[in-house]
Image (tube, rainbow, N blue to C red):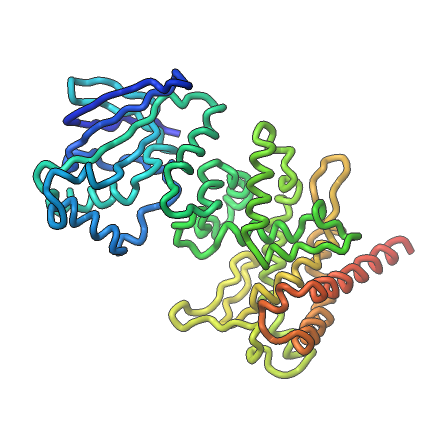
Length: 407
């Protein structure tokens, strides 16, 4: 967290105290667009300024340049920019230093800001153009963190904001970031809807959900099918879990399973990579011809299996077929009653060895499911009986291991 001053030279300024929350002050600046300060933080903005080639943003740019509207009317036609700041220092009658935390700043108007920066660079802003800047100060203390998030959410109602962007601003993914920070793929995770990254945080949450024996006990008939069927469901559960335990994050339900995440991702890679070989060796035929196997588009090259550091391949098992298999290994998850932390029954090496032992049977069951319900990945990913059959197979294996240990 770093708080820095940003110099605002304004044509007009006014401030009003909030009538209900007296510590909060709302400031309104009319800022000449050509003087809007550079590099104002956008930490509070739920969406980055992407899709700038949309017609609506082209129209805004044309308006700022005075091509599509009367010069001097930009602030009347545009909703302006909203900023969450820490304080404002008066330098002169129309000069202010706005103190902004890097984690907050612009809460709405990121696209407008980017358009202004682009036109500043091109020196194409029409004479007399101003932008209305609304600045909120006085949101101090930890108890107001939620209010900052609510403000950012409320300021972005024009286009629906995806929950993961809100959770990212709210800090719900910090525990996941801590777990993956030392992985060479940590920088490839997209936490917001506008992040153009190879790994979607929703995939990590969904894999975590597959190991959730609290909501899906191994002796129950329920399975975490929503982890594949509807990513938004486990994501909401994860976010609500964070919100409900904000004062003590260690009490989160998912905190118990997060230590298993990296291992579960490794197993996920093995399943997606090994399936083709096991199918060809045990079932016969060519796995590459199955619809549940996807082929890497030429433009993207070969698939990487970065979690398990396996060799690249031009084919892999689809999520719809892989998730029911991965979910079956929830049978190996147990929670230590003393620490409340989940661990693998027999250790993770035992889990990997069990996958190698069980792979021919699980692959054969998948082949049978294809015959029964169809070759579409979505059909497998959503079929309750298929999830249950795979789960029972792994369950029997675990029970046999336990009997062998007792004997």
